[in-house]
Amino acid sequence: MDASSAAVKYTSLKRAKSRTKAVKVLLILLSFLLALVFAFPLYWLLRGAFVNHAEILARPPVFFPGAPGFDNFRLGLERIQFLRQLWNSVSIVVPYVIGTVLTTSFAGYAFAKLRFPLRGLWFTLVISTMMLPSAVTLLPQYSLYTSMGLAGKPALIIPAFFCAGGNAYFVFLLRQFFMTIPGELSEAAKIDGAGYFRIYSRIMLPLIRPAMIVVALFSFINCWNEFFYTMIYLKTEADYTLPMGLYIVNGMRIPNYEQVMALALVVTTPCLVFFLIGNKYFVEGIALTGIKG
Amino acid sequence: MNPESKTGTVPLSIKKHAKGATKEAVAGYLFAAPAIIGFLVLTLYPMLASLFYSFHKITVMSGGQVMEWIGLDNFRYIFSNPGSEFKKSMTVTLVYAFINVALVIGFCLLVALLLNRKFLGRNMLRAVFFLPSVIPMLATTIVWQMLLQNQAKGGLVNWLLLQLNIPPIDFLTDPVHIFETLFIMSLWTCGGTIVVFIATLQDVPGELLEAIEMDGGNAWHKFRKVTYPTIKPVLFFQLIMCMMTSIQIYTQSVVLSRNGAPDRMTYFINVMIYDHSFVQVGMRGLASAEAWIVFLITMAITGILFYFQGALKKDDSMGTRKRVR
Image 1 (cartoon, each protein chain N blue to C red):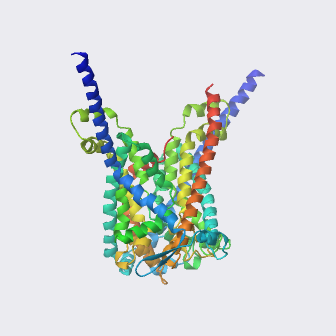
Image 2 (cartoon, rainbow over the protein chains, first blue to last red):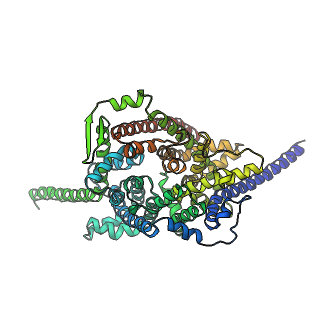
Image 3 (cartoon, one colour):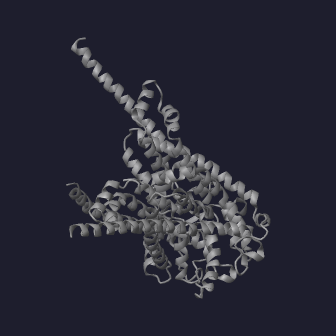
């Protein structure tokens, strides 16, 4: 009786084990299926940019363009002032990223490594701006920039130099990184007579380079994709950025979807390229900004 | 050498030390200056100015703004005038935000749990789930618009439904179905949260999971007793951040529809405040009052979330102590 019950137990255990294995395989299959669903819209964007006008509305739908060419891109780009808008986007993004990397790393260093009165209070205040709805500061900021003659491109760039406009996130991220650097390093440098700026630039910066790359990548993406504030500050068509050009074409009465898709792909491409270059940094950076308990 | 000189050196070293501390404090303020000035000029001042504006009727003239003190009239208008757009806008925004947060957090957690087991191609899948979150929301909205519009305009999903003999769904023009579109796009772009959750799940102690398995606990027990307490702080933080971004939804609405059509169901708070501030004339004071109410409501929501986090924490810390014993 004992032996048989043991045998029953053994087979049931074995069955349970094979069952959990089957469940595991099923779950992995499910993950792949879900990933396929996630990847599909991107494929659809790609397809849309390369099919011709007849194919984009064809029923049944054309999944693979018959004669892929770059006509949609040519026609799409002709509908916006492409070079001008590209230049506008670039001339906003480049100073924005530089400003972000500089000032958020300054602040991160100060809040992590330097002792000064009210440090904790200032840090809390700066970080709490992450949770502030942008609508509250919208109008006075607009009046402020307008009264100083800066309502336009400068209004989109200036916040980057003051850890504002959502950049408090990066201050937090960089502070976390600076905290991991042992204090002895800067103590030794201090004894050798190095000033704080020297310690920051010669010792600290090289050590947190991965974090700086993360911040640069993210601020690029954020700024390139910015839409709400560009709608507010860029009033004349000559100042429009690429996303705004795309928005205008998409809203036209005859949108020509295949051209819109081509333009959407053009606007998306820098993000895709940076993603492919920095996938590792992105994932690490995001994981770190999750605020680990 | 003598006691006097000794006492003379002590204050000197303290002085030196104090000098070092002052130097460090000055350096600290210099390094933090951009952030501090940014907070004061670009956040604190605008917030207070916004509050000040909210008690005014502001008319934009060619020469500038003319401000007229009207006390609480803006707030009275918002809450008691039937013509006020605020109540509907705030309601749809909050409904969207709450459902969206629940969906996003639940979905991201599920995907993270799926991807948490080790298997071939896991990193590739992680990249696939993350990729949509880096592309511009504008492009995202346009692609999904293409997929979900009616099939005569090339909508793929409705064509598929037609093949399956399911009546087509007006994803973009029906006041209720439009929310499905917004949720789909929101889930599609939540890869960042998935990555955070995956990273957090790495910290879940494997020994404890095994111990529960030995005791005959199922997957739910494991999640409730070990996984959840470990990831809770991160979960909570993501919840708040997701709430903040949900309340500030803008791009999706203006790309999909003008003026919040259908039936002002996507006339979200940020769309309305943008309109009142920059499109319509003479409503800047009202817009400021609306913005301040939004601010107070979000503060209240965050406060309530913090309160719940605290309440749950007490309960859990007791549980942990029990388990350790």
